[in-house]
Image 1 (cartoon, rainbow, N blue to C red):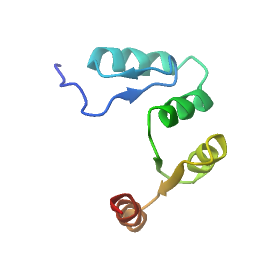
Image 2 (cartoon, one colour):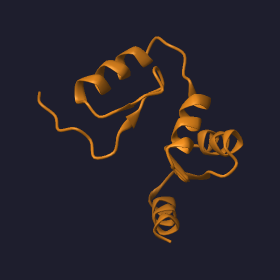
Image 3 (cartoon, rainbow, N blue to C red):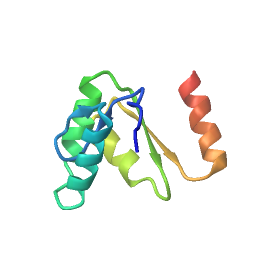
Length: 94
């Protein structure tokens, strides 16, 4: 199945590399299943590339809070339901 490259690069937890090639993204996702997560390095790489906000999608707020502790200047957002999605989108548009 052919896929178009994403408009925004995907930073994977295995290589801490911004990937735009669909096959490279697939390969990294497969390797993530049996390798350690390098979350501290991923958040550092995102921050160093100019990212100012991170959004965690799903139940809980662990990763958004952890992201702020790793880089205190990051704004962490948790999207847990349609209401919080609207709130996060509103915050990001400001």
